[in-house]
Each structure stands twice: as structure tokens, then as C-alpha cells.
Length: 254
Ligand code: PEP
Image (cartoon, rainbow, N blue to C red; front, side):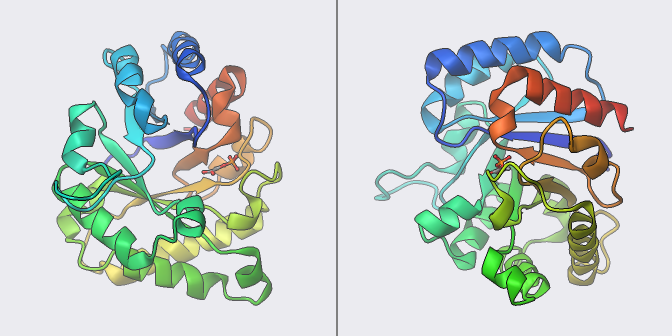
């Protein structure tokens, strides 16, 4: 099993080609000596090829921020797993809360995306998380369990090594303030136990990473927690110093 921790950069709908190119060049320069962390960059669709040509001889991997479940056909605006592989992606991000909220993605759509992506040999980061209202109404665990069960429905055990669960409490994303280490710890332990219940005979379970206002000041406490196998970083991933600092602290946490 891959025991490396993961640092996954989500650039969302940000950066232009020039900004993305210089950010990638700076990151490559700073992260030459990272050996025990899997680093993944996730630019928006138009820049996937350009970023791929910059990172292709490094250990850094490329992810899309979305994928469609059909292979081809009349699905205007959508992009298939094979198309993503063609432009150098080895990962697809699925089920980010911003897509659930603004594009009305359901757990059923997300499940179809997971099933086709893993079958096409992509690694998948499946994002789950509770809203502020769900947390306030003490429905955090119920909501996470539902997203896991419906998002991973019918996933064959042999694909689990290709899957990472990204736990992102929606109410802290982009807020500048991460969830408390106690909250992160208890939800990650819950996710780990839930995955064990869902896949009782599997020796290998998906890694679980935390996302939501991770920065260079809170990363050490977060990544030291049991069942936290890395982080998903939004805002701080678009600043070379902050992002590389996070990656180096994760490397040192080993
Ligand atoms: C995200 O949206 O995936 C994310 C983690 O954002 P931020 O780090 O900015 O909270």
C-alpha cells in the first residue's frame, strides 16, 4: 500500500496560463528533494496540457477538478476519463462541495463518476463534508456516512487503492480558519471506521485527507493526527512559498 502522505492543490477557477506556468516552475524548483509526499496539482481544464508538459519529468502528478461518467457522445461541455488521461491526468477530483452546491451534483452523479474513473485507471479524490447547518444540527456523521455510502456504491475492493477521501467541512473552506484538530480527528476516525464497515474484507482502505483553510501554521498539527493521510489545499496552494512550506512540513512529519 502507498503509505506516502498526499498534498493535493486545488486551484479552482483561478490563475491564467502565465500565472500557472510560473507557479509550477517555482514549485518544481522548490520541491526537488521531496521523496515521501505525493504532490498533485489540479489546474482548470484549459491548462492541464501546459501544466503536464512542465511536470512530466518530475514526481508531481496532475489532476482534473471534475470528470464526466460517459466515454463519449452528446454531452456538450463535459470531459471523459480517457480525454483526461490523454492530456496527462492521472487523477480526477470528484464531488467537491462547490460542484455539489453550484452545479447541483448529486451523490448518484458522483458515484457514476467514481465508478467510470477508477475503471479507466484514474486515481480519484472523492470529496465529502458537512455544511454549517448539518454541523449545527448534529448531523455531521449522518451526512458524511451518506456521502460515503452513496458515493462509493458498487465500487469493487480492487479499486480502493486508487481512491482517496477528501474530508472538507464546507463551512471552513476558504474561511482562513481550519476546523479544530479535535473535530478533524473525530471525523477522520469516523470515516476510517465507516470505510472498514463498508469494505470489511479489504486489507487496504482509501487514504483520508483533510481540506479547509490549511496553511503553513496549522499543517503540522493537522498532519500529525492519526488517520490524516495528507491535505487538500485551496488558497494556500496558489502561493509558492505557502504551498511548498506545507509540502515540506508534511515531508518532515514522517
Ligand atoms: C478547497 O476548496 O478544496 C479548499 C481546501 O480550499 P481552502 O484551502 O482555500 O479552504
